[in-house]
Image 1 (cartoon, one colour):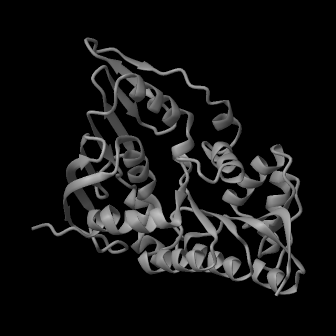
Image 2 (cartoon, one colour; image 1 turned 90 degrees about the vertical axis):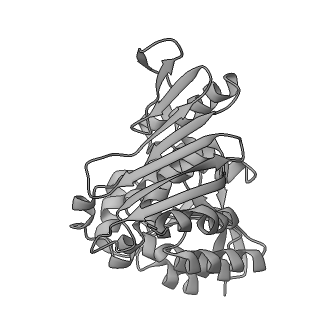
Length: 323
């Protein structure tokens, strides 16, 4: 096992997310070691980023290298995330940013959490929408107005597209955790963590038998009431609406922010400082910056928090009884 830890950043994965991270890290003038598996994806990665990755898979690279970076970013498919994180922890990597959701199910999340705690390592889960310029502006308005009084969110998915996709069956079966939590995480990040919640589900799909219709409501630790709805068998799209005493804030799409002021029916587009979101994958620059420079950043999700969220409200939302 390698005994020398370097200050380089190890980037695992040469797909679209890997290329997105590489472009950010290159702009930050960070020295990175990129590991991919296949030559085809590596070739495309090099065309997009100008960086030549090492091929053959990071498992083989770890076995043969003498120097392993202390910090790593894992941008692999969902079904490979937890395995990669566990292997990196085993080889002494102390700080890891792993793409959402960090694992394909509860047992994988817990395994990463337990190993990270045992090795005194820090593992974070990449929910980049927390770092959108639209999110930042919404939080500014909320602070000005004295907090969120209520909010509603919709995590409807395009099941007709997902069913035909080449995603692994296990990923589809856990699609709520793998994908929909982007919206749920953001809604609760802005509006508060559920303190009490009533949840209902109905239906089911061949690729997602647990449910296809979701509905619920509750209150958060910030005193806000909330409701949610999603119907994966009907047309729809992601969205969040946040109500304050002075404004209604609408994130639909999540990258944009529309504002309605009290006493007016006019809906206005908010002005955003979103140049970084336009230059790079939205939210990714600020998320990567927070991970590399401020491990205590309030917008970062730790693996411990991710496990807690699964137990307290992700699992109830997707596995609720329809009774």
